[in-house]
Length: 85
Image 1 (cartoon, one colour):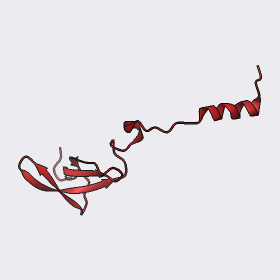
Image 2 (cartoon, one colour):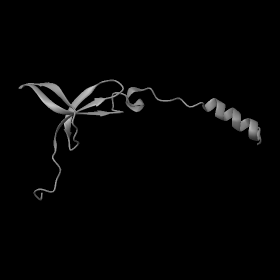
Image 3 (cartoon, rainbow, N blue to C red):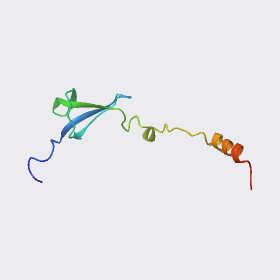
Image 4 (cartoon, rainbow, N blue to C red):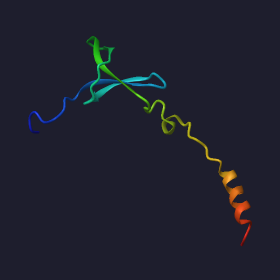
């Protein structure tokens, strides 16, 4: 890799705004907010990035998918076009 052209890749704590769940990972994101995070070497301070959706709150991962009103759609179609064959 070429030196001095890549952004700083460092540990960052992400927090879900909905559930409050936090996880430590690496990112190039920067922020002025910080959080104390316990590690094997003791408590360390990491940048904190608050995000709207993570796997902890996303409907695909939580099983809370939105159910479509398919019966209503079928009835609407039948009212509009009838039972033509």
